[in-house]
Length: 214
Ligand code: DX5
Ligand code: ZN
Image (cartoon, rainbow, N blue to C red; front, side):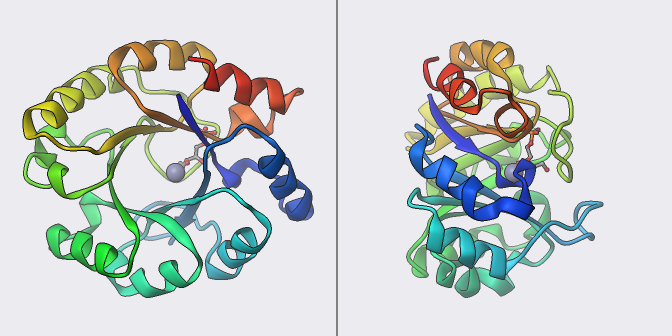
């Protein structure tokens, strides 16, 4: 399983050390949650923090934009060194165009859906993206409880990806821990995002290892 720790749960007073921990860990990517207080009821961080993360972190940056009108910021996200730029289905009227913009800027494109958005809405876009990020909590905060219905959505998405011959990876975001992940792995998930489970653990290295081994 690929693991993308979410920086949202890190100690921002010691960001350099937190990024060094990521560098030395077995994490595959670093997940950066950008929130605008409009699409989600919270505000997190923006470009200066992303740039700092790019400078100090040697892992690919997996950027999750929980903002309205993400198409306005494609070049800025690219300039922050993102490898993957993920936008929400719910925020893009012209999703196909936004995905093209992300590709034209030289990044991999991801699309995310909220817990209340059905997988079938991805039918005509799943072949165009490199990642589908299924939200397993309502986006906006770290440390929430995993919504069990996500498991059925993973199975449905795996089937859709196979049917369409898509290469998209399935990533899950929200409330992930080793126990939940065991079920996710069985359902066909490729990657998990985890914030609290990793950053609030007594032994963070062991937390990452527990997620990686499944
Ligand atoms: C939630 C964010 C998540 C969050 C996950 O809106 O998109 O990436 O940081 O945190 P945990 O793993 O603590 O639920
Ligand atoms: Zn996220």
